Length: 480
Image 1 (cartoon, rainbow, N blue to C red):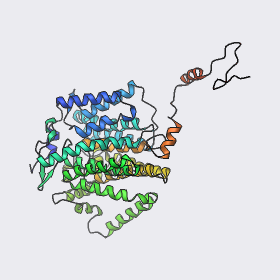
Image 2 (image 1 turned 180 degrees about the horizontal axis):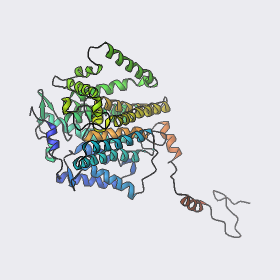
Image 3 (image 1 turned 90 degrees about the horizontal axis):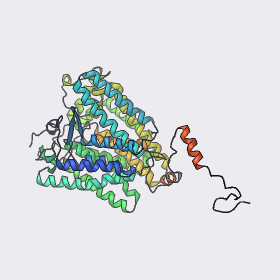
Image 4 (image 1 turned 90 degrees about the vertical axis):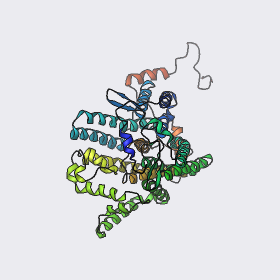
């Protein structure tokens, strides 16, 4: 299958109901679990479904595709509604940038394309993006342990690594029965490109490669967490190596560099300005633009580094084409495969959508820096907060070589939601002093209408003592 293109299998499954009995049983079980399990674990069904089931599994209702992750998003919303868990969201700058990005991208896309098919597609995109982000935000916003999230992903990495090892040895993909993935493993440049249940080998590699920093950070939690750190990092590396993708390998390298920069966490402003000035200096002395370095950033001979450079170069040269609301297609540029996440946002939403997207990333980095300073010398909290920043950094470097789709989109918004939820009453790691202080403070007070507050106050007030009986002090002692 040297000339196989994974995108051919993906597009063939849109617009038609595809339900395998096993897939149906899995999604029903996970939907029930979403409704019943404790709130702190309500994120787990979405994560597990994305790790183990191809995106071809879907139900089409009135020309609307409801793939199984979308069904779980609906189940999560029902859970919040039925159980009264729609608490007041503490909006922050990350949430606002995200919402503006989603709204601008939605209306810009509709304006440019202007047909019913485009509206249907964008509504599905909106359900994915807004659904993933706010489901995770609602779960994480009240003292959720970040190690719980990492533990679920670490446990999932073990069977996924076994699946990829089996595919690498047999050249057969066991998940092909569910659709959208080939039965025979794709070969490119003489190398196997395993993908398991994921929509593309690069997506699989970027998914697990970006998780290496948070898996490695479990080591600093001590005890049994060190075993989980070794097992999960090893599993992620098996998956990354089985994909044989330059982007995946570079994700692990960039993640390792970011982790090693932990001692510089209080000097990141200097580091960022130094990197920017270095890029400007290189741009001034190089014969080609500085982004031409991407053409040389390859690991395997069959990598398409030059194409990644070309996509960025053409987007900059045709800035006026997409500036306001994006552009319907890039065929006039000589570009058909948009292998860049930032360019993809630009051509679908224009400059303002890209600005909100970049603002969301910038605000997320600032939140990580604030949390690292808040934890100070606390090794558990500071390393876990820093590892989330490292994962965010890996995603940002991945966007230079691929635009996320399929399962990677879930992980991207999971990462942003975790960072947006960090704080004294939000996502803090167990075992740290900050976590102990948050638990001691208890949950944040819930806002009720004024009349409800008066009724609650009357119920909480002590009842008057019966006539002739002296009132009692707390503990049963009689007052004189």
